[in-house]
Every structure is written in structure tokens, then in C-alpha cells.
Image (cartoon, rainbow, N blue to C red; front, side, top):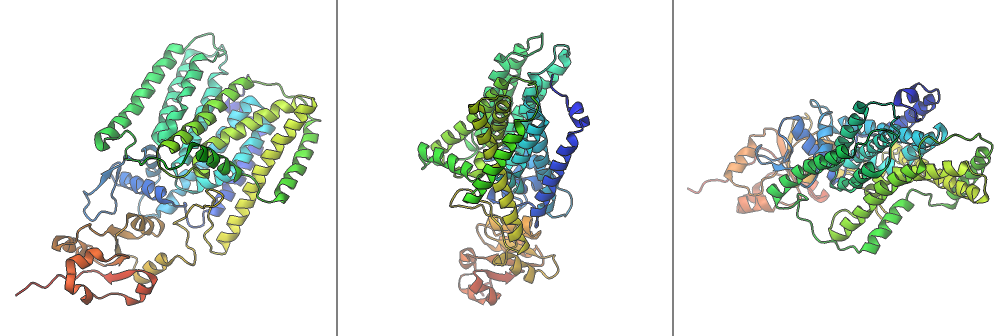
Length: 528
């Protein structure tokens, strides 16, 4: 029989797990020099979260000059910004406030993977799998950004833990315990979809719940079938809303993909390869560690298995395989972000899950084939850990030198980080020079720049209206102390025409690519 959560917590070896998790959390916080890391998606999530926190609802348009000029959230699912909004309070920096939910999700992912592996292996193997995941490059990457994948991965592991609980229910457990797992599992499955649309790829797990035998003397197929129907109904509500608002189920019109099926499969492989060392020394050290650990395991006592490995393999195939299959097919059908570390990251814990089960099984056998397989498993786990450690050290060194470290997305591309204050980032220096009182409102023409200035630097920001006229100029002048920072002055040209060159500007910023003038704007003289 598997250990309950209470038994695991009181187990002496759990102290080791707490030390491992605490060390990972400290390392994580050590890279959050400026707060949560930002990409374009991150800006949208935080904008919606802030709108939720101030009572505007699930909408974009926080920076609109007219408060009612908002757009309903459709292109992204709502659960991640909803979770972020729970942690947004007062006037504190959004960058700092968004760290806490990311940190909780990072720690929870490690805890849940540990609990799952504890059902199939022993404490040592569970700790190893947890440590490798927390130190891996995908975990470092995803949980340092305000990305929905951070919630998605944690929910996927929570669903996996519920499945292991379900299939190890003792026969003496009452039906109330089973009904609780059915309800909780359905809620988590629905939450996966409401976190990311691709969460629908986990629907085959309902088939596993219907047909895989349990230890319970009762059968619950009817209830799982009812749960599946409820799940379909719940996700249909959001799809119906999207169709009503945008005419599309996905909430946005997406262009046909220009990337072939084979190229997308290749991109998945390239993303996985980024988890491994790029230098021969890393592989040599991994080999040495693998030899030492294999020799040690050969002398250890055998641990009885608590749950059939067939269940674990089935979960891995349905979860990891289903997710990657849907990801590749969707990216071959429609255009969106190229497949890289971020998009494959939800499959990585299940990859580690599979390696741990295989290593545990091989450690119980005495054949030469089992020994070779055990060596390969430990070698892979060691290589992933070493590359994660090297990435962390590199990031820490770059940040300590006030440089903006960037995680890799593919062998040739890196992710941006809009929250980094690198020496070549002109925008923060300009706005800090202008805003001596920290009370000014900045007006810009791009949503991305507005979001960066507000979220990353804590400034009050509004968007320049699409059409400039006398009424809009009056609204701008009502903002009080402020500045226009533009890279394209065409809209102002169209309004001021021959009077444009008479506007007072900060000429020193022109050579840096920014056209800056102070509010209030002048009105156009009336013709006599």
C-alpha cells in the first residue's frame, strides 16, 4: 500500500526533501534580481490580472486613455491571470508581486513530482527525480517568467498525483474518498484547459480512469463517465464565449502554419537537447557520476514495488505523448510561437518520471542489460542536472555584472526579458531622467512599451489615441504632469500639420530614437 500524504510528511526522509526544496527555492530567488521575468505573453497576463484586481474583469485595455475602451480576453484562457490577480494588492511593483505565485507553483511542482514518484519507487529515487526536475533548464526557464506554463505544469502533476491515489485506493476505503478524487480530478482537468487551450490533450486520461482496474471493490465507471460529460460541458462554455465574441473557437484568427510536420518534430528534439551539456566535459562528469551511482545501487537492498509500473508507463504515454502529439499537430496546422523549451516544458516532468521508473526497475534486476540501462538512465539524469547547474551559474554571473541573462529557446534563439535593466536598455534611463517626482504619466503609442513601462518600471502609462483630435488632446492634458514618448510622430503630424515643428521637444533624445515632449499639449490656434 502506498504512503498517504500524512505518512510521507512524518517520514524522516522527508526532511531531506525539505532541504532539497528549500535549496531550490533559494537558488530560484537568487535569479529574481528585478522581479518576475517578462515576455510579450507575460505583459498580457499581468495586464489582465491587474484589470481583475481593480474590478474591470477579464479584459485587456488597462492603458487605454478612455477607461471603457477595453477588449475581452479571448486569445488566452483565463485561469492563469485569475491566479495572478489574487496576489496583486495596492501600489506595490507587479514584478515583485508576481514572484510569489511563481515561487509557490515551482515548489508545488517539486512536491507533487516527489509524491507521484514515491508511489512508484522509493524515497531515494523520488528525491532524485524531484531534484533533477527542479534543477532542469525547462524548470528554470518557465518558472522565472510570468507564463501560464508554470501553472499548467503544476496542475498536470496534481492530476497525475490524483490518478496514482485513485489506482491505489485500498478496498476498505469508503465511497466518499473515491467521490472526492473523482470531483477533484475533474476540476483539475478542467483547470488544465482553462490554463492553456492545449490542456484538452489530457482528455485521454478519462479513458484510463474508465478502463484501468483499481483495488476498490466498487466500480465507478458511471461516475467517471458523468465526470467526462461535465468536463466537456465546462470547456464548451469558454469555447462558446469565444465563438460569440470572435467567431472562432480559439478566440483569435490564426494564420496557417509555414512550418512542416518534420520541422516541428525536429524542433521538439532540439528543445530537449538544450537540457543536456553542450561541452564534452559535462558528458564525462555525467559518466563518472553514473558509474559511481550504479556501483552503489548494486549493493543496496531491494525495495518492494507498491504500484504497478504499467500504470506509470500508461500515464506517461497519455500525458507526455498526448501533449507533444497535439502540440506538433497544432503547430503544423496554425501559426503561433515556434516550438522551443517553453512549449515542450510540460512534457519534461513526465520524461523524468519515465526515467525514474525505468531506473528503479533496472536497479532491481541483476542482468547485464539491466546494468547498462541503469547506467544510461543515471547518465541522462546527471547530464540534465549538470546543464541546469551550469545554466544557473552562468545566469547568476551575468546578473551580478548587471547584464540581462537570457534563457535559450532553441539552439539559435533566446527569450527576451523586458524586466532586465541591462546597461544598453535606454528606456528606463530616459523615463527616470524625466520623472523626477515619480508622479508623471507617460503617453506612448505601443501597447508593449506601455506594459513594459508600467509593469517593469512601475510608471503610470496611457496609450496615444489612434486618432488625434481636439477632444483627445483635452483628455491627454487632463492627465496632469506627463510626457509623450514616441518613436512614430505621424499621428501628431496629421493633427498639428504646419504647427508640428513649433512643438517644444527634448532634442537630446532624438538621436536615441525617441521623440519626447511634455504635457500639456498646445491647442491649434483658431483661424481669425
